[in-house]
Length: 225
Image (cartoon, rainbow, N blue to C red; front, side, top):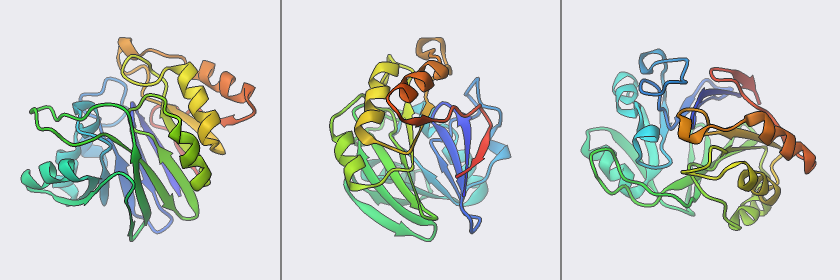
């Protein structure tokens, strides 16, 4: 399985069987993304919430690829009203897809689409694919139930924001790693705009200081999991 980081909170997962999953594909309007929406494809698009920097170019990509959306119920209804396929879920629920299992978790944030549609609660997502578990926290502040999430699922990778202002900053994100106890932490949601400027290597140093692993992915980089 491969993981590619497009910057901000946008990731691409390619399974061993060749299925492609995009998470929060904010590309065309993203000043740090190395690719545009017409350069990617997706069998599935997972949305953590409805904000424009996460919904991003999902509709353009889905139109090109006939992608299936996976997201919270209200956001799924919005997607369906736009004419796309959606598998609606809710926080705490999980479902098996042909690529693996998806479970939605809580996230402390907001969720309103760019055209002012209430998109339900924000969420994080745990993906269990090809024997690995990936926890994409979505946009969130720190919450103590991250410890419970880590106790109930052995997390191989935790993708979490460090940019502060709208989400956790570095200090809280390090505490989140301590609570969830993943094998490897990967920072996201930083340096896209000046207000969320952060040093991912400072985060890496602080994570390693508590005895955990951290991988800073360059924008556009793909790694084997």
